[in-house]
Image 1: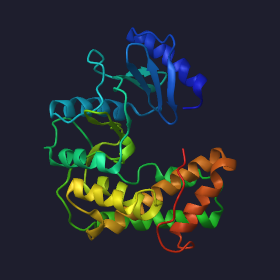
Image 2: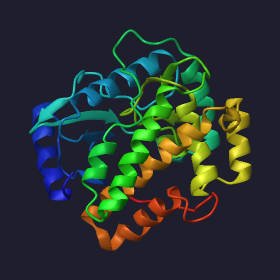
Image 3: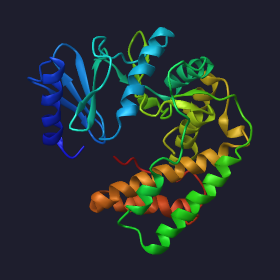
Length: 294
């Protein structure tokens, strides 16, 4: 999403097509996806161009989870498909009750329940942990040739490692972006949200998101990580394949920071290149205390 004005222009077209009012719409978040609060407790989500299949999947997953009695954000019942607005998929959702962002311990029991569900009868697709990485490396304007080649080699090595991942838990439905902030905590219910990356794959991928927060970012304390493991019933860091998934996630968030550095080097270059130096082994052992980018 380019900016608030561009996003608002798309919102006006989407609301007109859906028969909803955009009067007094308020931006909640404008990023790669844009969220707008509308009247009558409705939220509009504007996806990136070309993400139609992901938007269709988000709607299907949220309705399926509701049928499985897992609390999740709920789309408007009468809008069964996304709207295509100038190439961007737009979906409409019921606004959640007043809430705070969840924690690692909040998402753990929801993940356990999700991973125990049978595979649904609609297409989910298989997890691709390397999606968009090659393009982000190629487009990282703050890199020199040596740094870019190192990242390409690292990507190739991890693709080989992924292909021979050690056996673990049975493949299941996975959330795909399973951190505490993708839950909403209310006094009565914890809701699961953001199903853009939901797919079928190793449940350890979901668990690794919090483990990396603990071991790499330093944002999840020892106590918080212990609570997460207790609530889920397992510690993914004891699994033989953990380091492969950890390294893939570290590469992903490094390339994400480099993407931001390319468009706003003043704000993001230092953090992006610090992450790169860390995964190259030039800043000692983990945790590296990375700072959030976005």
